Structures are given as structure tokens and as C-alpha cells.
Image 1: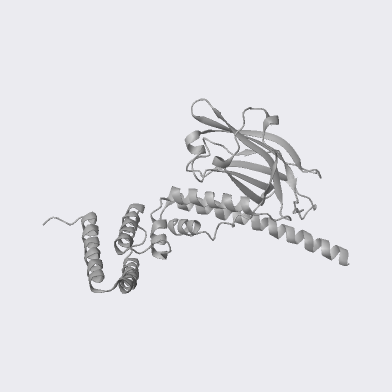
Image 2 (image 1 turned 180 degrees about the vertical axis):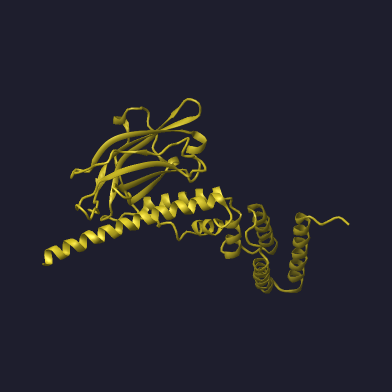
Length: 315
């Protein structure tokens, strides 16, 4: 006897839902039938969620998501505010799609933050189309603003800036290597005025979630520490008409955020769950944890500096 395919099962289930909806509409008045269909929708979602299998492929969750949307359509109930539908939709994302969505969201959050006291990195950035369906991103790193003195040994900061394109599924490091400014040592004027270039395919450049990550680190003999980082969506960079640094857009001061700023997002939580069995998700989570550890080490040293200063002035 032939085994029934998942698609056939789905169609059979939807046909059953359709017959139930027809019976409800035939037996009840309009307003009562609407309430009954809403209750039926909730019951079906609860059952689907109860039987939902964990750690399946995105294709499996895509089929479930399609079924949920079809049920909503048959019952004429909006799925816009359905937590079950939203959850299954998230599960249907591939790992790469989750990572891209994460970077897209935190790039928006960095742009929207207007805190005046935060440390900031000042730079100019633009892009120009080149031959071969490529785009040349040009960055001029200018300087730092409101940077705390985090080196507890000598009460100074020895910063440098690291530029990289993310995510690595689009920009593998061996093809798009990280670029760094020089380290500023024994310098009160935190200025670089260094320019950099990245040549990237247009297809990657315009991908939603493609980001330029700007990290500011404090150089230390033992282990460098993260002062903060900012993100810019590549598809929102300003186009320029010349390769000259002088033709770059006006400078912008980007707030340096904590590396855990996006760790409450559903995308991150989904990636953390998926990291148990997915190598790409595991590498992403490891990268974020490393950045977080470097940042909190910086905070710890900053606190130590302030404590020493307080004791010195108190004695």
C-alpha cells in the first residue's frame, strides 16, 4: 500500500478544516459563527504547536507555516497577531536567513540610538559601482569621541579600529579580510584619518542584512578589549561619483554599542537554540560570545581604573 505523502496529508487536513468551517457557517448566525471560527482557530493552533517536532529542517517548518496560513484563510481569521504562526515562521528561516535578519535589525537599532554620552566613532563612508557587477566601499576612519580611559595600568586607552563585512556566510574572511587602523599609543588626540576599501559583488552589497561592522578595541599586551561596535547596512550607504576621499559624504558619529545589544532578539534566541546541531549557528554564537567577553573585560578594567582613582583621591 502506497504511503501518503506529507503534502497529501496537509491537503486532507485542510479539506477537513474547510468542511468544519462550512458547517459552522451553516448552523450559526454571522456574529456567532465568527466567534466560533476564532475559537476553532485557537484550538487548531494549540494542537499543531503541541505536536510540532523540534530540531527539524527549515523545509519541515515551512510546510507547517503554509498550513497555518491556509487554515487562517479558510476560517477567515487574521494570523497577523498569532504567536504560533510567528514562531513557526521563524523556525522556517534557514540559518543564513536568521543571521542576516539579526544583522539587519541591530543595524537599525544602532542608527536609532541617540544617546549623547555614549562613545562614538567618527567616519565617512560611501560606495561607487565598478566594473564586473562589483561595488567599491570606501571608508575614512576619522576619530573617537567620549572614549573612557580603560587601561588600568597607565590610565590611558590605546585604541584601534577593526573593519569587517558581515555575515561571514556572505563574506568569508579569506575572501574579504578584516582591515585595521594603526594603534594610537601615548596619544591624547584620538584621530586616525585612515582610509580603507572593500570590493564586493553587487549581489552581496544589496542583500538585506549585509553589514559593515566597525569595532573599536583597546590594545593590551595580554588580550585586546572591546570598547564597543557599530553596524551600517551596506544597502543604505550613500553613493558617490568619485574615488577621491574628498568626495566622501559628510562625517557621521556612530554610537559604539554593547555586543549583547541584540541578544534579546528572537533571531538570536533561535540561532542559539539551533547552535546545538548546526555548525553555522554554532560559529555565529561563538563569535558573539567572544565579543561579549572582550567587552565585559573592558568594563571590568574601566571599573578598576575608577576605583583606584577614587582611593587615591580619598587618601
